Amino acid sequence: MVSETFGSQLQENHAEARERVRDISEFDSWINGAGHTTDKTIETIDPVTADPITTVPRCSLTDIDTAVDAAWRAFDEEWSDTTPAERSRLLSEWIDVLRDHIDELSLLECIDTGKPISQARGEVEGAIGTLEHYASTCRNLDGRQVSTSEDLHLYTRKEPYGVVGQITPWNFPIWAAAWKLGPALGTGNTTVLKPSAKAPLTTIRIAELSEGIFPDGVVNVVTGTGSDVGGALTEHDRVRKLSFTGSVGVGQQVMKAAAENVAPVTLELGGKSPFIVFPDADLEKAVTAVADGIFYSTGEICDGFSRALVHESVHDEFVDRFVEKAESYTLGDPLDEETTMGPLTTESQYETVMEYIEAGKSEGATLLTGGGSPDDADLQDGWFIEPTVFDDVENDMRIALEEIFGPVQTINTFSSYDEAIELANDTEFGLAAGIATEKTSLVHNAAADLEAGLVYVNEYGPILPQAPYGGFKASGIGKDLGTEVLDHYQQTKSVYVNLDEPEL
Ligand code: NAD
Image (cartoon, rainbow, N blue to C red; front, side, top):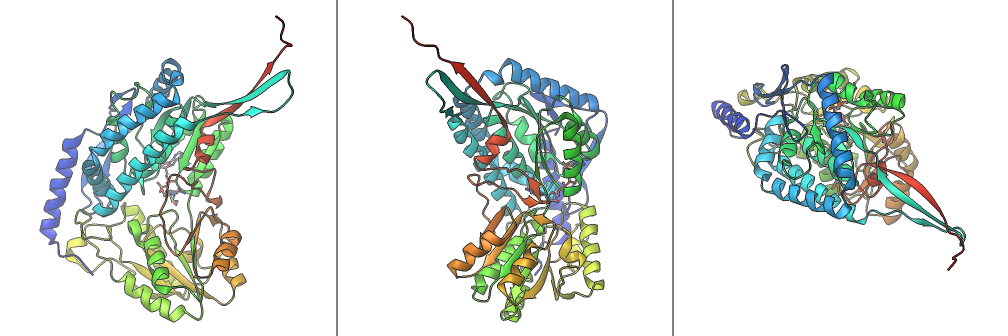
């Protein structure tokens, strides 16, 4: 289905929305509590019309040094002396300001990524909820006392690293930034954060909205290309901890760079998540879960259920219902509340997804629906791809092996529990997995047997800050979210205190 927006109207709406975006801010980098400009800049592009939205600075090595210096000064002079309660209060103050800007941040995220406005708003609210969680959790930071003997008091202290380097991708910009900033700041670190140059606007804006709340230098945002700015940040010898979200290939480079400085790394990487539909599944729930898990955010989701593994006895019915569901999405202007699928965020991602669709056809998979751009003159300038479904997919085909990062679903069948688990685990990735069944024993057995950091039963999502999030195998190291992430931003010190016999 295609929405009713007319081409010229769509172009006009977007020109006007881009104007509103430029009125909001200059979108400079944010260093030491102020906007930071550079001679060289990078354009951000509206994925609906392929027009530039605005420019952001292309930071140099010197700019990264300046940001790291500012972050250390803030840490040494003020932030390391704050109590958890003081940090909690400042985070809450920032959250109140962000709450007052939900509409503005949603517009920025929508224009910059092409996400439907309703999804953008949900993610802005999710980001604020995550920060709220860590504003509260950081009040409960503690060490422990270790039992020894009467003449020794032995306890542990958890201390921040100092300056941390954080790198985020373009698919969930504000949400990923909140996942990194909440726990890092709550535990007493200062940060230099690099958003993706492909969608940097909300990250810059939330840093600007912290002005006058945090001491200058506590939050720094540097923009520029991945290899220059990201590389410089990961190689920096005064960055004590790195947290990276992105692709496996870049994650490996980050890990190598971190090894030079023996800096600990958290890596949240890609996925190729399976969803197993068991024979007793409620197919309505299964179809909704798999569709949400591959078509939300135009399939640009790290934990997307891109591989449906369906029991042979329910295959035909599942396929009929799933194709119907795929064809029910409303592709159109992301600014329109009725739109349920926007364009891919970048032209290169559009080309990548189209290449995978061609690979699927040439490898012999059966294309059931989609497979190209929508036949709508209004959407020809944007990077739209229809929800695409391949059946008869074998696990050794590229479309089943590699992360496509677009609205492309593969389906294959299984006949036994063991075969389902074997197919599900037959991947280098291990971010998420899903199952649809009404049987309790199947739920718990499969949850234990699946090699994945997250298991969803009869649904896709939600992602709650209370629970750890992160992958197994090539999908990553360590966790974002939960209480687990707090340990990634703190180092533990053991303190031995000799207690002499009391003498009066
Ligand atoms: P990417 O790896 O290309 O880029 C991620 C970030 O790293 C960007 O900010 C980029 O500018 C930066 N970067 C690029 N080269 C660098 C280098 N040499 N050194 C340091 N930084 C560098 O990934 P992407 O295309 O932005 O995002 C898509 C990928 O992210 C997918 O693989 C997706 O699965 C993954 N992802 C994972 C999660 C998760 O939580 N596991 C969440 C979202 C996205």
